[in-house]
Length: 360
Image (cartoon, rainbow, N blue to C red):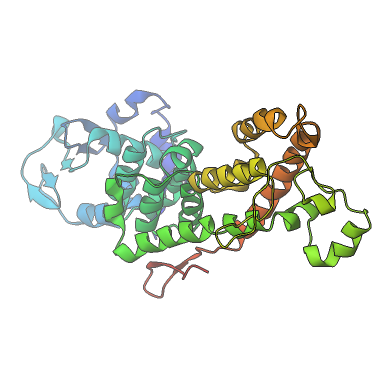
């Protein structure tokens, strides 16, 4: 399997002894071949470096060549470069080749700021069978800025290059954004529409965790199945929140909902029902537990409490703010538990192709 030159000691030390780490590393006179980009930028490099990293270049250089030649997409010509060095003219631009060559020359790449550039580099590495380049640079797909702003693009790129760990990370990152109205071009990397469909199904299953959890808010509050602690509640051993039913110590001044076929929440106070509905809507735009702890969400609810009830207010105005924050913490933890139960585990088939397991 091709490897990067980072692990080759004597030969690399000799070749790198006079290059240093500055930008003119590819203008050194001791090079024995010129790589020319599609935008006519030339890089003076060494056949040994390219051959060790890529069997494509190794095969090309192993064929006896005229004293002066040019290689254009594996076709030979009789044109020589500066100092009569052979020229390998490639279809990749200089920016792409520079990243590849600097990685091969152990000069290192500390960061790649453009996801499109990273995708082009990985595509070129795949084309020239440089497995070491892919394994070295693929971790840049985990860059927080890429995952936070363009997780769907990262997902598609990772799927194309058979990177199971990155697929899983990117799939989870897509939950933190509404799905885009316009799809990125990298989705063309996906082999079938079924892959995208499974990603959508994964999101739908994750969204569905919020509804029953909010309806069963009591279990969230007490942390256990309500029926197991009913006797404790009746005995007054359980500290119940202000929005509980009146018979369980809840506020008696609040305007409450009613039990109907259309009511999910029953006789809870209307302000708390409104809070649960806004929690649900916010969660579906950013599907993770901490979403329900949003200060914007809590402040909106808390701001309307003093005007509820009669005779200048109700018990909720005093007790509910702290209880809401406690509830949000518990709800966040509960939702994260539920989300962890939804699987989108990628696997590699016998043919070396990524497959997304059925969503459960």
